Length: 416
Image (cartoon, rainbow, N blue to C red; front, side, top):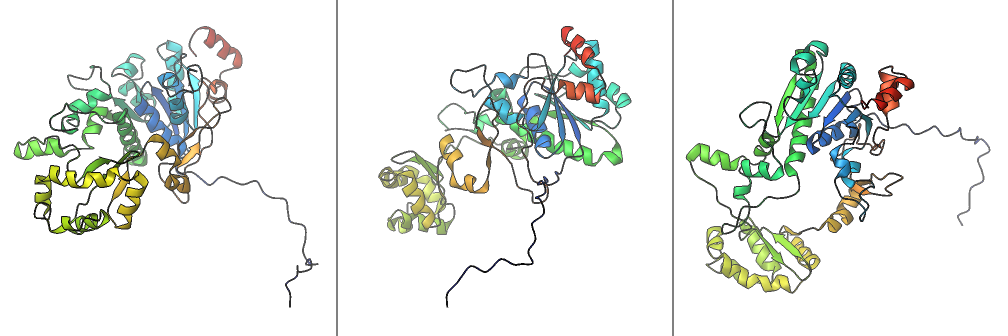
């Protein structure tokens, strides 16, 4: 008996033409959002809404939002596409508008009348100066939800102070607890406070939108500084509770970062059974019974002696070798990843974490895509970051009813 190709089924018919594939619905598709401001937190917040389906209009000054001039760029081409702009502004429409003019403020108000949410990252008092303060918007746009993001908040003696990420770290009491005890305090990362504030603003805005039927529109006063403080409340809590200050512990053994042949590896054998497996992984079973290291407190008290014994083991191995051996012994070993390690990680590749956010001008740009997965209403890249003012006609003419002639006049007047 042999297997042969079965004859064509005489009853088979020509297949109907393939239907165009429909995108799955998106969770935030019903919402119309207007974003305006000059800070990363506002753009990051609005990005979440756009990426999960909301119609986001990004209102930019005629010179463009600041992130268009912030790196990374390809080589020295500062006139090319900014990687930060490509990342922050996916799934948005861009219009240019100067609300500091009377006509510009009226056009922005017209946009807000049909919007559900305004995300603004402007200095305190700016909206008031445009005739778009809280009382004005409550009267003219009673169902509008407003998320206002500033460094210190809309009130208080510091409301007009200038700040940056380093100021947020310092004032949030995070910096004083970061680093080694005999070195200066450390700031970690790049604009972390802005992204933390953006996430908080997004969650806050969602809460206000879904509670709008009960209370109507309202405004959230979100301070970047206060958002960052909530990430690490331990220091403030310790002092408030028992008047103690937490010191800088750094990477203190047995939670350590150590050098291998080709980079750094971190480990933390936190529990007794993990310490035993850690000793086995290193081929040093004597560490289990050595009185200097047998108990957790003893290990911390004899940290320098322990490191002197184990460091040669790591220096003789590559990061991948050390991590493999550690993981085989069920001990949390991890390579300290470079950006290359991150982008090329098989874990993220397998999960589709990165996506191409490039444009025709920029070429392929693999960047962070979905922040999390949703089965029925997933993250979607519907459109790449827009050119400056790309949607002026679509938004101002189709939505607000202006003619192209009027648009041309407004451009000459410096309004758009």
